[in-house]
Length: 254
Image (cartoon, rainbow, N blue to C red; front, side, top):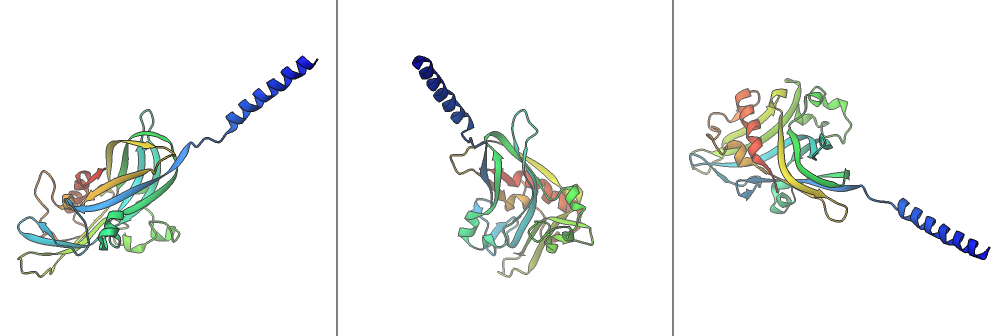
């Protein structure tokens, strides 16, 4: 009888031990941070800083912002994991100083599944579903609430906005205004950036994206945008398409 009781006690301890190991919490998700940093060529983009432009022009910028839609982590065997549906990336205030430019614009994300990913996909602009809405449809904290990013005359959101001025004759006077806004569903672009991304629960998970504003104006293969004659753009589809298309080469992942 004592022998049977001893066996029973040992078995109870073993079963209890197994149960404890099985119910121990295992983290299956983690937090991540998508960081956008703006450059002009090989330099950090700083507002009101003078940069070279073709034909001996000089340019400087006062604002640069754009909407990012449907940030999706790519994973083999799946359609991808949507981690953010809409965000506004606005460098206007952050890039007043070098420290702010280095910090960039950060989009914090939570409850992202752990694992290995093969890249990231995102949209530049606002999807047609959201573009059929208005700022009044959203609460104060929503990215689409700000009416300054909406044009009622065109019934849509400003996908990308770039403002600044230029010195066209080298006299030091920046009196040539530059204003570029892209808007309308046909201007929406999707970009896929292949890379190896590992998200785990032991390290800081950061996905760093570089946006080269110079590349938006000066494509790698092709002529630079004629900022002398095409300097204030609100509705001209060819120029809006030029800017939207160049985002494909202007955005890269580090």
